[in-house]
Image (cartoon, rainbow, N blue to C red):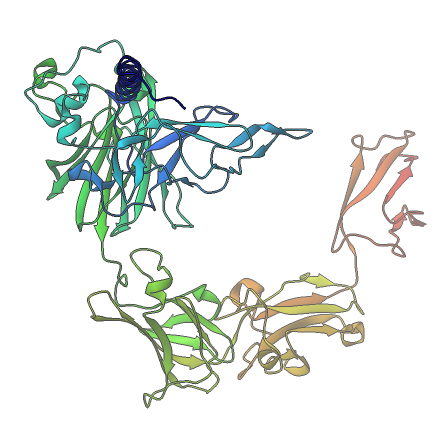
Length: 582
């Protein structure tokens, strides 16, 4: 190869320099384009929300869970970690965006089960943490099923960092700096009619609470339980719905604890300090500069009070569960039904969680203070069977609270064997040889489940003072009722005191039944169709009996000395024709 001349060498160097300058210009242009692309965009933080363009409900939001960054905090007041390009976890993890229109079924769509790519696209590379780019409102995430995930809310609250301050919109500036006037959005501000406490995390038996027109609904919660509120609107732009939390002092609204302007109709908060707070959803700004501060007051019909407490036992009395079946008050003393399982429940201010139940112990002791080994604890309930006669028992619930203090609930009682309170009723008049059946209806305890086998064998049955059976019921054959007369059946455990001559049922105890054995007879008859007339056929009808007639019974008539019988027991009517007047 021949060496280059000076002119050729200078030309080549010039060409290379031009190419380098062009390349640097292109790089600069690209960087400027990237800068302008993210300009005026907020960084996304933990709790920010996103939506999917392939969801059946395209407004269905999911929360971004930051798990790849524990160093960089965006928005210092809220202590929010910045989301990175690798933070692809969402809350909820299943049915994340509701239903997916890319997965139809014969009748509906399958629930969203996202399969995201490993990283978000369009992340901001001018700020990184551990080499990972930070997300902005511009960032997107691709689902391999076909959906495109976009940022809905950045998640920053209450304050903004220095680098974003100049990009904050006027409403957020007014939140941080009261000197900045709120923008005029009068026609768009929502009108909040009520708010609803929708959910408390991990509170399985929670029912929704709605604010009412008069008074303020109240709820007790633990420290650090997350609450989800929803605002109901009459009109207006739901995105401009705002929230405020007040501290409550002696039942009255005090200082504003947290203010969240233009948060939207859904609001979540975790309380980390004991006390009572009022949560309110509202539309028009509560600032001194807007409308001369006329809206800067609490509206109780859109408020719910939240009392943050340390859970503990509610009172010092351990309560029987379904008490009437196994316990009662006799005089001033509690009694327990001997031989019947007794269940007690330790009541808390809040339904106890797993950790709290682990600090609860319930057991029974006898009169000497010895623990009864047969008792069984399940959660906050305790069951045992008092077997000894006339024995004194004490049931104790001991709970060690979070402060290490031991709280106690107790219940003391003496065992008592059953006696019969009442038996079933039957007819007050029966025919000879009619069998009778009776059963125990109640003892001094409400025996909804019937008597136990041990209790049933202690019940005896007397007929006119004579033992005729035992058990929870008795069948007395008709042979016991051959003779007409008065009878009394009585059920008892220890002492029988019924007397056959003591009077009617209303004058006697409910553990006995008085009745009479009689043959049936006509008590009254009358004419059908008016007073009989000579030569005109008239009907006579027997219309009142000791007992309603049955098959085999016939009415016998003596008419003008002539004996007649009805052919049918259930139609005791005969025809007569008077031949002369009398």
